[in-house]
Image 1 (cartoon, helix red, strand yellow):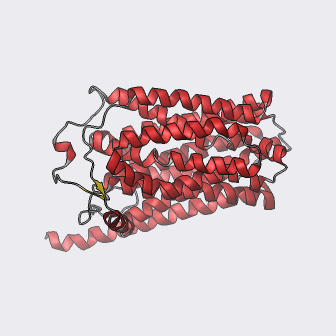
Image 2 (tube, rainbow, N blue to C red):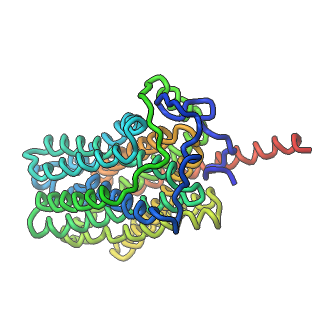
Length: 437
């Protein structure tokens, strides 16, 4: 089976490039010193709970204003497109800072970077409710997103270094599941708190939730046993990044992550406006409760490993695409039950596709894993930022149907990339046949 879902050959990424943007003094792989974690071994459960808590905090903070956009718009007299920048600024800043912060994690450690990222993001989260203007709110959210950039790529690299390869997809699936729980709980919490006390109190509640998760993470996360620090080397970083960007397989995975997140960002940025308008006219608390469908994402991301085992990576990706497409089409109906079912399918498809693509990056890039994961996260969150803004603009111009059209266009891109990768894999297998005779 190829190492990723796009159908490329089993070329190992980074074999001719430094393993990180650092200069190390030991050539032996870190895994040769300490045994890696796997289910049933000491430390694996603590690591799982710690990274799950980190995922909850990260997504709760990152998308804390998304369910509150109608209330924020009303408070500052802003349009949907303007209010959407309170989400897009955070995700865009994360996309820009994830690569440099992942490089710092190579020097100072994955655990240290994740701890610092959560601490700064939580501190800013406690300041966000006091933003005096839309501009100040957007600026604070950008700082928060930049701080959170230290978490995702470092977490992926930490897992790749500390967990056995056979258990890697399941471990990453649990981290992604934490993301889905954070996204769900943050939106539900903000919805009901905003209905009772306003959107500022709702953001304060999310900050306190993230603070509790950060404390859990700090005390549970095991020390990294297979990490080897080195001195920063910008030239080596540039070479490693160029190597990854020169690999067609990784580029396809980055594009798939960005396109999936474009769909997800567009849908969940705009859905609050649609449900608040006629024919639904739902109150803020009920709209926040709609995000209970994130539980479906928790299940589908955690089950990604089993899907891959049964269908293969490309098969699992095709299933994710089909599920997302069905959800988008169902959401066009002016019936609440159909819209809810559509959101369930969109969420399940997105989280399954994201778990498969992100774990494929970590498995493919045996060298420079932090940078490979950082590039994936950059593409992923740029897709979120673009999806949120474009989705809001489309909704303002043509209603929900225009937002769905944007999502279907992104899904078509995922299908095209995957089909191309499948053809490439078949052609490479045919080319290898004469050489084996």
